[in-house]
Image (cartoon, rainbow, N blue to C red):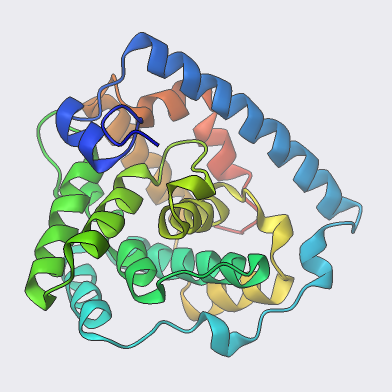
Length: 254
């Protein structure tokens, strides 16, 4: 993966402000089509009781957040910056991402994954100007990383996972943290890959971190982001990805 030319990496986002060229936009629309087709198939498997998550198990202890200077610092910033609705979404994102990692047997840095999950949407609250919100989130993550003395490599992993997370398809080749962060957020926002998770994981996450009107809230802030950066990925998701409908149809009550 070429960091400077791959849409969504921290290098690409810093260089472009998150604004897409026409060819990049067309590729993302193609990715959206594939995601939607997979989502339709997955939802039918749930309805037919053929979803793999129904036959899977993840021990609750395996999805608990780790305790370290990095995770505590990320938690402190998230609590200070995020409204409760987004804070709970961030915790659910980690829970779902961690569970998917367990089911796939991935070796992932749980501390960096947790920090990425807690900080990935801070930009939706603090971003200004005309740059993609994840750039502000990545700056917040950089400040946290510097505060706790995180290595250069781990800091780049953290920041790139954040700037990549709302691209329609984030492959494992981008690294397990980026791959799982995007997958966990996709479960919580649009129900993508919910069929891969045990029902108990979904239910426990919502019980422990209630949604509190998340669908209505996230639909509103996403529309604001799409309007603020009309050439960005948020607008592509909203315009071509039926994102408002995808949020509404996620398999959660609110």
